[in-house]
Image (tube, rainbow, N blue to C red; front, side):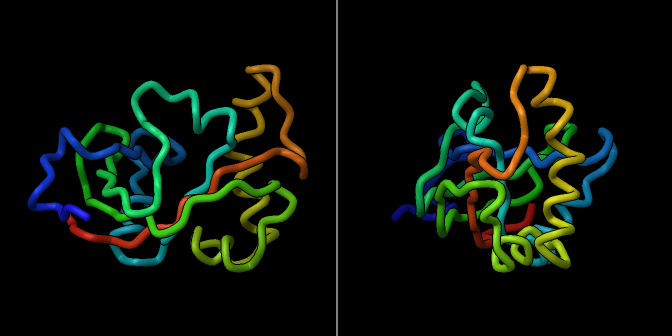
Length: 139
């Protein structure tokens, strides 16, 4: 496996962490502090992003804020699909949520309206992609 020094940033996959507005970089800071060690995305979005390619275990990924700044680099340690209704405590904690209920509420707020605008519902059967990671380098 190649390390950060051997790969140029342009060779790494990219991930942008979104907040409530363009200035909200709370999620990036949670990654840097080690509080957030996973991220989840509805499957319908995960494979459709032209800028952010799907990851595999071992991939090095540059994490960007909403202004496009490279803030840190992570390594993917797990990647799998799960039903939204099957999210457990491990995933919730890795997402820096206090409980499965809080995780659900936060992600409904984040995803439901945008999915609805695309004609897609969000319920317990919605498939999401979960990516667990470790921080490799802070910028």
